[in-house]
Length: 66
Image (cartoon, rainbow, N blue to C red; front, side, top):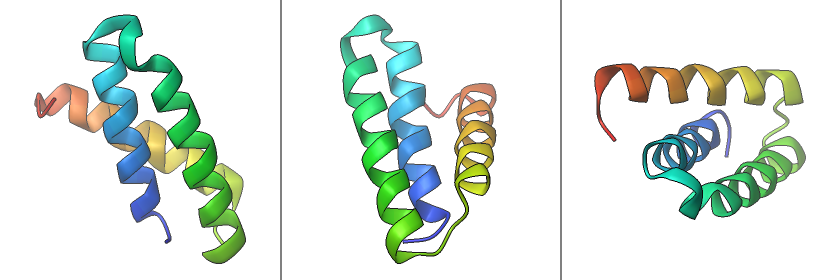
């Protein structure tokens, strides 16, 4: 559970952005829980996780995968 958790959170965030407000609460919950898990068990720094999630979200949106 390292920065791959950032990809999972990015997928949820990108879907929430594309489909409007329906999935925003789910995306925020997934981001927080995956971030806590990555921090606790993966020894990932919080700023690394946030930057990875932001970068991957932007990449998914730019490439049009969602």
